[in-house]
Image (cartoon, rainbow, N blue to C red; front, side, top):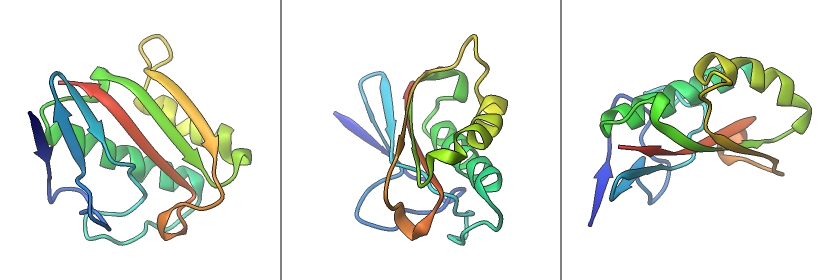
Amino acid sequence: MKRIIKTDKAALPVGPYNQAVVVGQLMYTAGQIPLDKAGNMVAGGIKEQTKQVLENVRTVIEAGGSSLDKVVKATVFLKDLGDFAAMNEVYSQYFKADTAPARSTLQVSRIPKDSLVEIEVVAEC
């Protein structure tokens, strides 16, 4: 049985999907982009956008009863892989190397709302 996670403390979905879904002991988030809780794109570059995305991830998984330290897998989508180091600088403030989740990082041609970064995670509940 799946449980839907929805919180108004983060931007609501921009399409027909949920912020996260829990199945068994795992929570799967939708990709989070740098929207504030009112649904507005945050100002700034890759660092500011990555920070907002990770705050959104945190808010959604906490609404579902999990936390960043329970994230087991992250997928990062970057518009420009040249932003990898700057994204990593912010990412490392949320996930420490010795306990960080497994991660894939990919460059994609376009992200919704022309974001520079999108991140989805899988977390234990």
